[in-house]
Length: 134
Length: 151
Image (cartoon, rainbow over all chains, first blue to last red; front, side):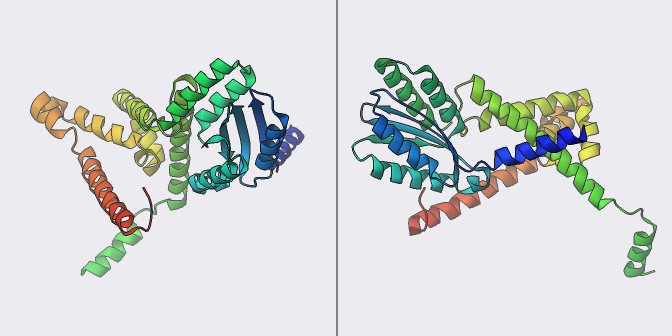
């Protein structure tokens, strides 16, 4: 029993220390070059633990999860991340959010991989949801 | 006997407070209450269209409601005896303060008793909460006007 505890603790520790952020993405027009470019960029971020992205008709929606210890400066990290993504994809309308709910919803879209019309509807809904203040 | 020697005698005779144990139980109780709050917040985000920012309002309302029900059933009293400040500082302490005052003064009638005394304890929370919010907003407005920070 003690051994089991020890192993699970070590696994938890090691799992928590995974360095590179997990990235999931979906490109409606299936442009692998753009996908790889963004995935590499997110994977290189030190303060981010998770990232998801959807490309759709010159629109790019990205959600990130900031690492627990960096959560105090979450807003700043999100802003600088958004700036850098915008400079990487200057011809795209970029939207970045670090909200957990938006991240969950975007992951659902990535899993479903819907058609163009539905993606547009879902992404518009997502952006409207993120603007709600109360 | 002057005031100083009196205080010394009191200190000698009074039982020592287990400060460390009290801190630990308060930490645990407060932590558990906040953990439950986090779970409720996640539930609002998962099952309803609330974001991380907007889920805080319904979470606070739910926590206060739960504390009110527990106070009515007499369970929050026991939690308070065990956790001390750990049960009073989170927002659940506010619900407890409102309902316990209402229960206490119920015998004096609904208008002068319950109505007049329901915010007897929680009133100070509201007064100083509003006042400190005003002060913080004032400071922020001045800083924004000066150009030190943005909204």
